[in-house]
Structure formats: structure tokens, C-alpha cells
Image 1: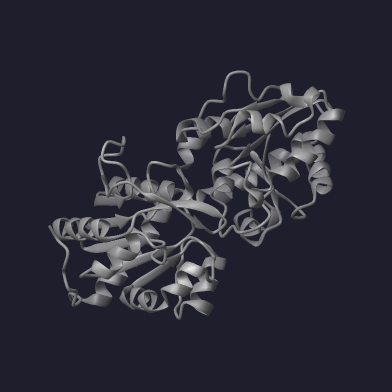
Image 2: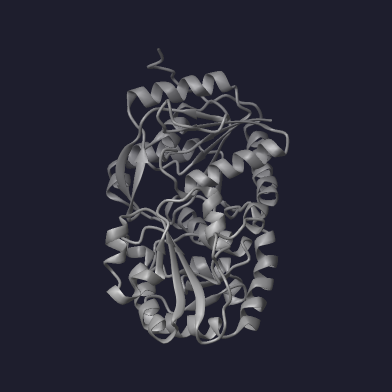
Length: 386
């Protein structure tokens, strides 16, 4: 099968959707299919061979963060040329309601279109200003995929249609076989030591880092060997300035990490903490931590609860409560048996998220979309081509 996949966000900046698209493409290629990915990126960016760069992206506030997207006449022409040359059996776009390449691809498509919705947003000013165009986009989509029950609920209640729920995948072997960073995680004797991890934008309110910081500061006063490992974008001085001076040597900041080093980071801690306060439709980092064999502690968000099988595969704590998080961390640091039980359940849960398993479910949606269109070509006016 010839498959065209469109990512709306720049490959020059790492992100969950970008990683999803790359992992899906590689899983499909591994299953014997021919895949081309179109994404915003500079022409000279180091990219996998299956990725076609669509030019530099621009920053746009989106879902409480900043997405880097591509839009406009030049992007439109590039999308259309890529579609013509690709002669795809199916076009798979991600986040088609974002003002970027995916939306342009849907409007330019001439065959079956599958769309994956990652977020659970119901509206934004940008969406409200383009309702007419968005309705056309939705009508041109043959089949929809939602990565979570919450994202699917938005489709049913706000987008006039249903969606097949297929979760984000995770390359289990990549995480389970990763080597810990030098000197981590070390022993974890009750009452003294242990390593806690956090990955994300520590400056972004909804990621909940201040909740983890408060819990860690109180806990570190009682446990002289407790350490915190942080990875993600941000300034090191800004991070260390958030901690009392006498505890800063217990905090290690890796900054932005590669996918390989992310796997190593997750293998380097006893507990991975996701203290997010909201805005999450799935929880990709949770599945990655589970794949690494790390015990997960997470806010009791609906999306996280679903990934962690209601708390069987990871410990949940009341969202936004640093005291409850501190107690949860202390309990697990002192109880290796409880950590082992959670990890064992996590191994079972994460097997269902392994990319070959997820990719086969996506292929079923492709086949249904192709059958639904029965080889028909949509009436599309091709303009703006060089």
C-alpha cells in the first residue's frame, strides 16, 4: 500500500504528534508498506529518508502551548505537488483542524482521507473564525481516528461524527532495552535514597512542575540521598532558581534530549512523575515510562487514569495536590514490592500499545476508508501549482 502521512507540526522541534507520526511511519514500513511523510521543516534539516520537508514553520499558540505550523499559498502548492507525485492509496492527516499542512492536504486530497485527532479541544478563536472551511474539511474526511476516549468524545459531541479509538503507540523494545545514564538510578534503601524523574516544559503551567517541585523539596529534606532528574526545554538557571540553594545539587537538568536519551532518562529513575493539571487527551510519556519498566506516579486525570488501567499500572494522586504527591512518592520509595507489582501490571498494559499492534489497527481503518470510497476521486480544483 502507498501511504501518505501529513504532520501539521514542525519536525525542527520535538513533540508528541511528530513522534507519533515518525513511529507510525516506521511501523508501517516495517510491515512492508511504502510511506511518505510531509511535515514543516527546513530544507537542510536532518530528517528520516521517508520525510519530505515542506518549508519553515511559524509559531502559533495552540492548546496551551506553542505549535510550529506551515500555512499559506507556498505551503498549499507544496502539499498539492506532494499528493500528485505520491499517488497514494490513502492519505492520513493528523490534527486536520489545525491551520497547517494537514488542513491543506484534506482540501487538496483526491482519494480516501483518514484523519487522526490527538487533542480534546472543542473550540478556539482560530477554529471559530474558520467554521465554513472546517466544515468542508470534515466533510472530506473518509474515516476518523481518535487517540483517546476524550478525543473521541469531542468528535461525537462537537464535530458531527464518530471516530475509531486507537491509542498512541510506543516502541516498547526501544525503551525496555535502553541503558540507564551513568550513576543512575542506584540503590533505593527505604527512607533515604531514590531517583525521581520529570520530562516536559517545566515553565508550562499545565505540566504541573511546581507541584512536583513542592513535593520534592519537602521529601528531600527527610531523605538525604533523594535526587530529581529533569529533561525538557528551558533554561538551567531558571530551573535551579526554583529550588532552595541547599537542594540544587540534588537536581540534575538534561535539557532537551534525543529520543535515545529520553529512553535512557526514563530507565534512570525509580519513579516517573506526571503532575499535569489538565489539557491531556492521552499521556504518551506514561506509556514510554511503562515501556522503560519505571514505576509511574500521575495526576488523577481521566486520560492518565485510562492509560494506567484505573491505577493498576501506576499510582494516581489527586490533581494539583503536592502534599498527596509527597505521600505517594514516600510510600512507593519505601515499598519496592509495590513498585514491582505496578511495573508488572504496566508490562501487560504497555504491550497493547506496542507500535506493530497499533499500526495493524490503523491499517484496518485505511482498508475501510479505501473500500468506502471504492476508488472514487473527489472533485478538487487544482490551482496554484508551479
